[in-house]
Structures are given as C-alpha cells and as structure tokens.
Image 1 (tube, rainbow, N blue to C red):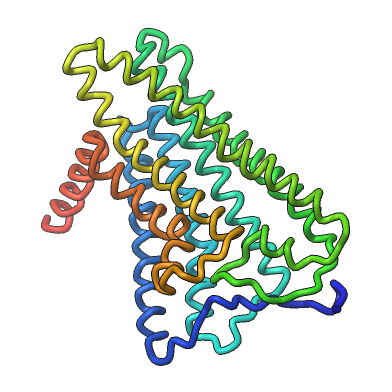
Image 2 (cartoon, one colour):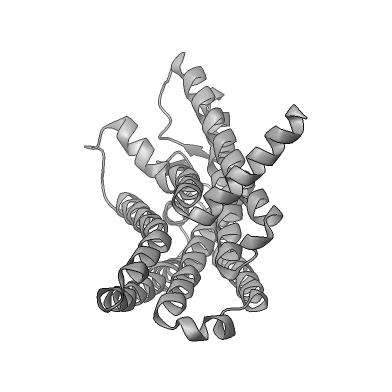
Length: 315
C-alpha cells in the first residue's frame, strides 16, 4: 500500500493502443473542439450585438453557451493530449481540477435548463405576468447564483475527497471521475465523500431539476392543449430545443452513473468511449446548433449580421 503523499498521478486505463490512428483521433478531436468554440462563441456574439435579443430567455441561452465551452474544455484538451501520449498519466492536481470542471459543468447545465423551463412556463402559462416576474436584472442575479452556488458545492465535495488517503492509481476511464477516485481510497472515512456526492451531486443537481422540469412541461402541455394553434406553435418552437437538450443531458448522466458502478466490458470499446464523453462533447455542439436553427429570432439575427458583414466587405 502507498500513502497519499507518494501517489502524485493517476493512470487513465481506458486508452488503448491506438497505433497510427492516434493522429486521426487527435485531428478529429481538435476539429470538434474548434467547432464547439466557434458555434457557441458565434451565438454569444449574435445575442450581444442584436439588441432585439437582449431578453431574459436569450440571457439564459448565453449562460448555456458559455457553460458548453466550459464543459468541452474540461475534456477535449486532455483527450487530445492523451491521444498522443504513451503513458496516459494525469497528475493528481489536474485530475481534481478536471473533476471540478466536469461537476460544475453538469450542475450549471441543469441549473440553467431548470430556469429556462421556468421561463417558458411563465411565458406560456402566465403571459400577462411575464414581464413582472422575469426581468433582465432578475435573470442576471439568478445566473450569478447558479454559477457561484455550483462552484461552492463542488468545492466542498472535493475538499472531502482531497483529504482521503489514496492507495491505487488506475482509473478505468478516459478522464477523471469523482466516484472512481474515491474508490481508490483506503481511508475509513470515505463514506462522507460518497454521501455528499449522492445527495448534492445526484439528488440536488440532477433529480430535483429533472422533476421540476417535468412538472413545468406537464403544465405547458395542458395549456397548449386548451390554447390556440398560435400558442401551440410558439410553445413548439421554443420548447423543442430545450426538451432535446434536457433529454440528451439526462441520458448522458444516466449512462455515466451506470458505467461507474457496473461492469460494462461487454460494450464495444469505441461505443463505450463515445458514450463516456458524450455529455461533455456532443452536448456542447448540439445545443448551439439546436437553438441556432430552431429559434427564428436567432436565425434572423444571424442572417442580418452575415448579410451586413458581406455587404460591407463587397463595398
């Protein structure tokens, strides 16, 4: 057994011998990362420049797009480094930093999607009270609370884990996972860290938002069934991207939780790796594409900006 002071790095064991394919994987990951950065940053700039989009819902979207960049940055740079590496080691400090980024990304993602669900609920079910309940100043405060509260929660979680004695170094993933790092501990008091992870990580950060979002959609559906065709079309346009986004992130979290606690060696290796990184890689590109293509106001703003830019260059 080794004590915690002697273990300075972990080994990410899921990286296999990729041979020359590692350069292809690196290139694909780099292009994907650049696409995520460009897509999310482009929509943030669009919302910032178009004054017609300076509304509460689009402020939440900006928060979501910033978080997508944050989440993707937690995984892809590390992934690219390890594609080209021979040892696949990650330092303890960077491992905990990665866990912090991943957990905070998930917490902020669910927090933002929950507030967006509330925004749509008020807009569709209580339209006359919308401008009173949902204001830009309120949204800014809520976004700040979501980020600060999530950072504090994840920081407290890692403060417990960092003090545990570590007696193993092998993490059977392509990135650091809190539950597996705790499993490497031989400290008798690791239960506290696992309980905190369960209560705050699963119940408060995931289960509670999903339950509330489900409630808002039931209310929205009941109003749409009684409302006019225009109401149904408006609800369909604004709620479809949100529904796809929340469904995607829930399935990604569910798969991640299952694979952390059960043997999934029967799953084909490429598919296993893909699903492991799905929530941190596909979700950050899916959201800007969904909202950019589905919401008519953002589409019009994009066309206006691109048209103005093209006309200026021609002139």
